[in-house]
Length: 217
Image (cartoon, rainbow, N blue to C red; front, top):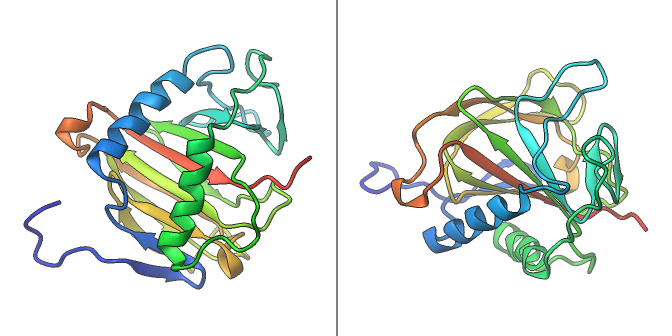
C-alpha cells in the first residue's frame, strides 16, 4: 500500500518465521492468479475438505504434486473425484527455493525440492483454524504466498493452539516462511478483509499458496 506513514519491512514473527511484505510484484501475482484458476479446474480440482470430526473447512483447496487430506498425502484426489493430482510445475518449485532465500538470506541448504503446493481459496466468510503442517516427513521450511484480499494471520507456538501467538496482517504479494524451531508452530487465519485485493489483480477473495517439501517417496 502506498503513502503509508510507516512502510512495511521484513520482520521476524518468531525464531525461524519471517514475514517479507510485497515480495511478489503485481505481474507475478497476476500470473499466479491465472495459474490458480487453471489448477482449480477438474479433474482433481478445487474441493471442500471434510474434517475428521465431520465438519467442512470453509476455505476450499486444490493440491499440486501431492494431494493432501486429513491427515496424509496421496497421488490421487482420494477425498474428491479420485483423479490423479496435477503435477508440481518446476517454476513453482523454484519459487519456493527463491522464497526461502529471500526470507533467510541464504539458499535452501538441504537440496530438497519443493514438491507440494496447496492452494486455499478464502471467500469473505472463510477462516482457517489453528493447525500445524505436520504431515510431511521433511523438515524443510514452509513457504506461504498471499494473493488477493488481506487477512489476519495468527502465528502461534509449537505446543498449543492457544496463546502465546502473534497476529499480523498479510496483504497481496506478501511472503511468510517458517522453518527451524517454528516449522511445527500452530497457525491460522481468523479473519479475511473482504474487498481489499488490489483492483488490478482481478481477484475477489483470497488465495494462499503454501509450498512444502514432502519427504515422501
